[in-house]
Each structure stands twice: as C-alpha cells, then as structure tokens.
Image 1 (cartoon, rainbow, N blue to C red):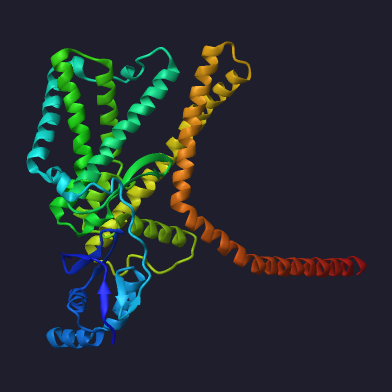
Image 2 (image 1 turned 90 degrees about the vertical axis):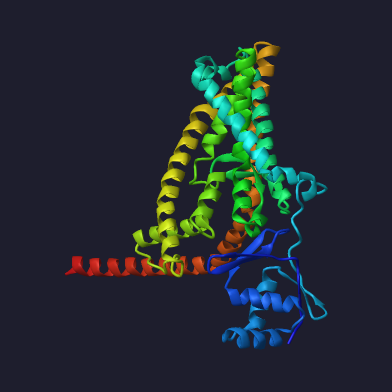
Length: 426
C-alpha cells in the first residue's frame, strides 16, 4: 500500500491504447485504458491498494497496481513513493532553454504554413515557365578554386541544415515539447537532427506539423530564391541555395533511414517503432536463413502493423545495402583520393597557394569524418562497451572450449597414428 507521486505526464488516446510519457525526457509507452485509470486514481491521492479496488469495482478487472507502479518507476515516471524519492533519469537539456511556448506560438499558425506553401508553389510555377531559373549541377562550381567551393558549400549546407532543424525545434516548442538539436549519424551520413520525442503526446495535426516543418521551410526557401531570381535575374548564389534545398528535400524521402518522412509514415501506419521492429524482424529472418530459428519478434502486434513492418523491413534492408555500397564508393573513389592528393601536395608543395588549398581540403575532409566518428560513438558507445564486457565475460569459457577442442583433436591424431601404425605393421 503506497502513495505515488508522478513526474508531469502527458496522455493521449491512440486507438485501443493510450500513449503515456514524459515530455522532458522523451520516454513514452503504450498502456491499456485501465492503466491510464490507475495513473489518474493515483494522481488523485489514492493508494495502490485503493486504486486496485476502485478499478476492479468500475471495470471488473483485477489490476496489479503495485507491479504497474514498479514498471513505471523503472521507466522514470515516478517521482516519489510515500516519503521515498525514486531515482529517475534527469530531463534532457533542450536547445535554447529560455525559449518558451508562448514566444513561438506563431510557429503552429495555419496562416504561416499556408504562406510558406504559397511561396514554394509560386517558385515552382516560376521555374516551370522560365527554364533559366532551373538550377544545374554546374552552378555548384561557381569558382575556379576547388577549395573555396568546398569550404563555402560546407558552410552554406550546415547553415541551411540548422534552419531546417530550427523549424522542427520551434514547432515542437510551440506545442510545449522541449527539443534538442544535435549531430547524429544515419548509416554513413553525418546529419543534424532534432530530438522531439515528446511530440508523441500531442494530437495528430501537431505531430504532422512538427514532422513536416523542416521540409516546408526548405521548399519555401527554394521557392523564395526562385522568385528573387525571376524578379532580379539569375544569381549563382541563389541557384546554389535552391539546389542544396532540393537535394535536402530529396534525401528526406529515403525512408529506409529515420528521416522526416519516415516519422510521418510511421505515424500514418500506426506503428509504435517501425524501425526497431523492422530491424528485429530482419535479424529474425537472418537467423532463419542460418537455421537458427527463434521467436518471431512480431508476435503480439496487430495484423495490420505486422504487414507494415514486414514490408518496411524489405525496404530497409535493400535501401541500407544500396546506401552503404554508395558510401563505400564515395569514400574510396572520392574522399580518400582527394585526401591523398592533399597529403601528396603537402609533402612537397609547389607554392603557398597549393599548400593552402591542400590544407583546407584535408581539414574539411578530416573534420567531417571526425564529426561522424564522434556522433557515432556518442550514440553507440554504451552498446559497444556492453558488447566488450560481454565478450570478456565469455573469454574464459571460449578458452576452455578451445582447450577442450585442442585436446580432442590431439587425441584424435594420436588415435589415428596408432591405427595407421597397426595397419602398416599388419
């Protein structure tokens, strides 16, 4: 019999279940209706035993409220049990913490969204009727100095990526959801991404707005640049912005990675964690191919969600394989070649211009690779350490098995020599 004090929790109905979670940590779970009833009764001050009796009286179902509370405490949802503080993960520090929902309420305005889409559509119409406005790949080579083009394009790309992520952050913050912009990895790609996990507790329109806000801003910027070129004439910098934004929108369509369109698709398909479930199902199929059958990870999911996960798993495997092959080709035939040329030039530079060009190229390439490694390690370091500890814990067993195998092989060799000598002697 305990009294429970929760952290601030958000709850919304989602089909036959409810989504419950903390916006400040981004942790969310799906619970049945009587679980939500238990939380609400405990929030009203009832003890766990009193809440269990009340639920049984109102629904006719017996609920192990004590076990349910223990599970919620393990997830970090419980602040206090009776007079005892419960340890829980600290809230994630958001980007721009002083920015409040009241400051950016306009980010959810349908009028703003309509204006941005109008600019994007008008720019597309202008480019359709004026071929000179359409960007070309040659527009990226706006300078004869390759290093200048490389450094300027990198700076422009990161600035535009920040604006994209800022759109996600502002729309999420307007909905009362803290967000954090950080560097991350998607396969071999270094990306800037915004963690807005707390948006799960918002209504569908708000969730879709947060998912699509970055792409809408990208299209509006591209449309605005096209309109500026239509009014003042073609300009190389505006063409570079248009091309960069169109490429950014195109990459969001690679749904085999967790892009903006992926999260929209996941929500439309009513899947809880499409990527994780598809990864587990792909590993399950791999185990079956190796004749190591196990329990199907999709058991227990609704039939419609199972079909969606199976289809997405095929897309994820094929897309990831193709992306990794492309990444390998770019690494070996472009990145390493450019880096090798830069280092060769630095070994015996013909002049200060060539040396500066080589240094800039090396700094940009090595800097990007270093950022990728740092972002990958931050995300996967715990898993790597756990795997290393698991491997060390199995090492004595592996050594014993190896010694046993060696002894059996040695015994077999002795037996073989004995039989062979007897055969020869006979």
